Length: 264
Image (tube, rainbow, N blue to C red; front, side):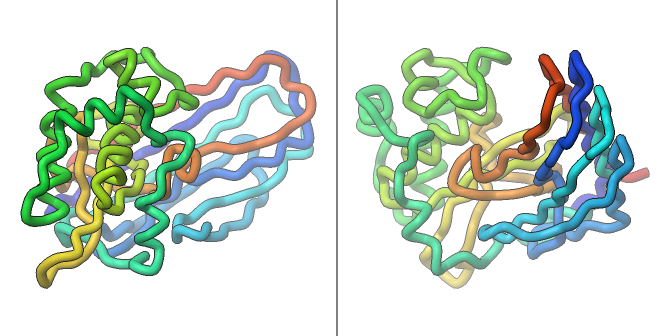
């Protein structure tokens, strides 16, 4: 178990003044079986009233509208997290079939099908099978910053042979779904990284500890105490941190900074 301090900061700048800016933010970690969130604080600039809700996967989000002219939008989320309270989480058993269906981000083409033929080996449990494929993926795929974007599919990433954490995760999800293993996409924070991180949870259906286990294919490890979960869903789009519409604004640029460190 670890006690961590976290700070999530996002800034969007506009080259021209924006107005009537409606936003939805999915950046609030919440307590569960694996983690306990304490002293959660949210700050927005410009200051504006907002409301909270939960999506169909149980993730917290906030939404609001900025009616005044502004050329900058800032979000800061801080708090403390006790992590590693459990090695797995339960829930969403009624959605298991949903997490075996390929979508536009994970749908396999020739590249993924070839990788599956090379890496798949049926083991005794889903977890062992998924770990085996993760290890193979890590050996074959190369991490290269800024080599893909948020719309890159798993098939596209496999064909170019490199990508970032989003690509590692969506490739492993695709491989698991081809093997009939329920797999979902997770966004959160990782100790020592300066931005948000993505990983995978797969469902283990055998034994007394049935539930979702975290695998980090970018680092070829099971999820450790240094991870704080923000949200999960079928793919990147379900976990997208920022959505919004506005008038004006010109060209926009986004910057994200994440701090996650052992609480002192």
